[in-house]
Length: 200
Ligand SMILES: [Zn+2]
Image (cartoon, rainbow, N blue to C red; front, top):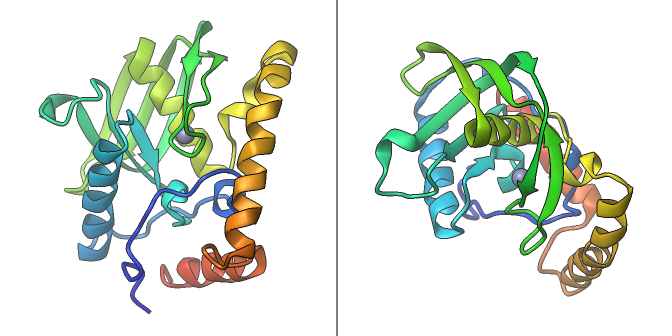
């Protein structure tokens, strides 16, 4: 099975991949590099700051980001494999969106500063201390790898104000499934298990 056929694309809530915890990648091979490059491309096309593998239907611990949201700013771009948050400090509230929830923006409380670790595409282990927007992006993306979404972090007012949008996403998703544009949840869950097996 070639996972790049059909082409990778960003999935929207409530696609089951978004709730499926991702598995660590045991090796950084050509397949991982191809997936990462494609994810970077999709992130820029969608004008996002970050994109995690479960958002393209892959149950792997990998995310890509560009802190500046600018494809010409290579220094702000990163590809992070098996990322871990080691420490968190402080809290700060800020507005977040997510490419799997188009047009939904809500305030989310996050740690202000994080110390993190991940492998890059060259297989080097990086340790970084980040604050403000990069720290927020990291926390949002690492949550994705554990099946946690930003809507899970909303306060009571945020939950109430997001409710209409979430119903709309659910309606659109079910309609696309009825039309056969998206496989059934059962088929998707089976695909996720097969994609995990490819790691062994
Ligand atoms: Zn997201």
